[in-house]
Amino acid sequence: MGRRDWNQLPVHCLVEILGKVGIESLVETIPLVCKSWYEATLYPQCWQQLVFTKSPCLRSSKRPIPRLKLDKDSCFDFNIVVSLDNTNNADDYLEKFVQFAIGRSNGLVTEVVFHPKSRLKEGQIAWIAQRCPSLKLLVLPSYLSYVINFEVSNSICNWKDLEGLQVASLIGLKKTIINISKNCKNFNHLSVFVPRIDEDVAFAIASQLPNIKTLDLRFSKIERNDLIVILKGCQKLEHLDVSECKGISCDDEILNLARSIRVFRHEGSSLSK
Image 1 (tube, helix red, strand yellow):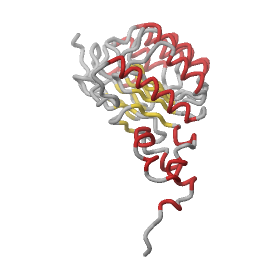
Image 2 (cartoon, rainbow, N blue to C red):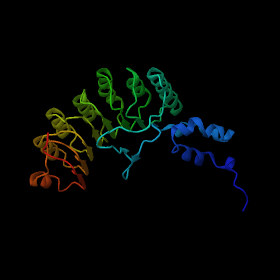
Image 3 (cartoon, one colour):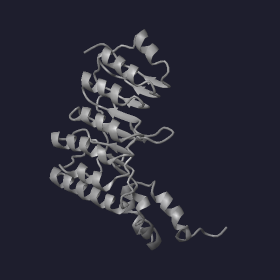
Image 4 (tube, one colour):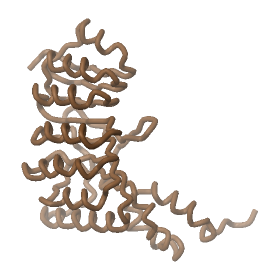
């Protein structure tokens, strides 16, 4: 058998492969292989899934809405893509990297996943919203300023195709949920990692997102009555994760309400405060 010449691989096949290798490889290694591979990285289709982490630990279901694998004691413990001593330099690097990758996508981005420890600047989410109208998945860092949280809420109106969102702040979340209900008809996955799910957010989830399929509330505190409100309101849930949550114990009423949920995870949940 003759030696395979990878230069002869049809460009559409090469683009399909390169779209799955990760943006670090698209920037650092793939363009150096040969001229044809470099030219393939210029196709916008290679830049649809932008995961700004080196070790995202993502897993997916049938339609891959990535679900970050979090640790109980330290929910966000991945290796950051930019390892610089100067935080401002790291922030500037990330901003330029995001702008570069989104520029290459020519508006075709469907997924943006940020490292939990990323530090976004004011205006960055609004900038992304203007240039990524086809976004389906957004995974946000664990800390966002007050202003940026409301940028997220307002940007939802630009993402008619949004299917999944992961947030780690209650600031502006109720407005975000309302805007999702109004604008995102295909939305089906919400992950909220906060110290406490309050009554307003629980009611917003139940009343505004009745067709949601996946809800992840791990490690939060949630009152029993608020969980019941969600279970009664979101009757199309297929996956509910309240493992390691405080304030609840899965008694007979909760288990009965959750009986139709295909995957109901509640390991480690307790009434302890």
